[in-house]
Length: 530
Image 1 (cartoon, helix red, strand yellow):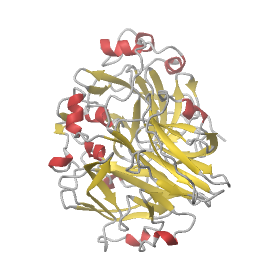
Image 2 (image 1 turned 90 degrees about the horizontal axis):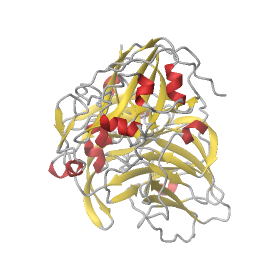
Image 3 (image 1 turned 90 degrees about the vertical axis):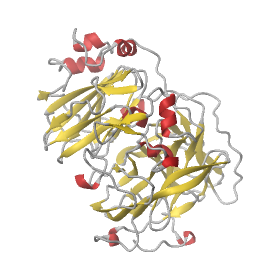
Image 4 (image 1 turned 30 degrees about the horizontal axis):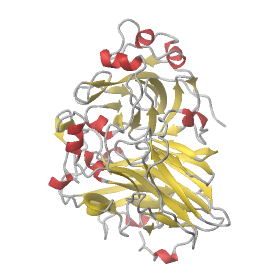
């Protein structure tokens, strides 16, 4: 990577995150076993939130800026250094071209020790992606952008926005408040693993998708008979009607209450602030934009337990990508964004200029965060961090409108899996009645197309994420549809969601809820591809 130019010398393709511009230079020159400077350094830093200092984590590139921004065709090549006080497990979220052994967040992936260096070299996946720890240290902001500008992105100003939920309390304290005790079932093994405390160490033209066929494998769940899946997607969410007298594993009284229509709820964690590029709305980032200029907002939900609605206010927006995958432009000014998801919006600044807040409102709540796009000399008024009315709950209505630029090709489905999302006493979140470590992995083969049906009788939304792959959303309660390509999908309460995946590489891939307290207490399994 060439040295970072002065921020004053950047052209209209400048990329902004935090309070400074991110380098647009390529990464290809970093190859080899040793780099002159680390590609990334993961360490600790002090952040001021609402006038109070907090020790958090940060991931910086060789130019001293958060994360990495590159161009399509560049490689992620160089060393990742663990400068924290504890072992590190990093996940390159959305990097589907990364070799299996270059992502620590895999079964048996191990940890980068204190002071350790991991050498990486793989082609970057185009689009808006991100990097984060696969430990509860993400709660302490151990996350950063990992953006690769597409060759066809056009002449736009790119603005990267990282959203976070923030608490001064440690993850252990939060987990105890939730009723889950002081431990979690580890993401990388069956044994219970303590949640790390940052103050005591690491702390810190669409193609229709065919109806399912072939081998229907439940892995602990009775498979529906012929035609059952269609019924499950169009009929009422009634456990016995869907699955027969035996129901599903984990279908205890609590789950049945959920099935029968318990009111949805969200935000089981109480947060002290919500941040956009490390700042709350009492002191938001102000990004200078040009009059009449086009801006591409690359918005990443790096929150641990919070979904948002992104609102562009006075600026009409077009959604051109989600989770790094391109789409036929979809107009709007309010868009849902669950934990782990990404959203690319293109807006045009009026020629008369002005200041334009871009806000993110917490799902089912009034809390706000965001930043301001402003032309030179525009007055930036003080913003409130609370909306007049609470936001709605997230659902799949947005996904049903998206038309993928590159959907899956039409072909038969080789296997179908059914996963029942559940909750057990003691804040234990389950898949098919089991927590991770007591689970039965899903098994498939390279070259197969599989479908996974998530059934959610709980009263919370679960953003389900599959490592190492992009999938297509192909069905929900209203029936089958050719939906978006994603790596993280909203599974609303009391609702089934079906995804289709083409398996193009071997490995053991985690599949988990991206509400990380749900993942840490059990809502995770593995997809084993041989």
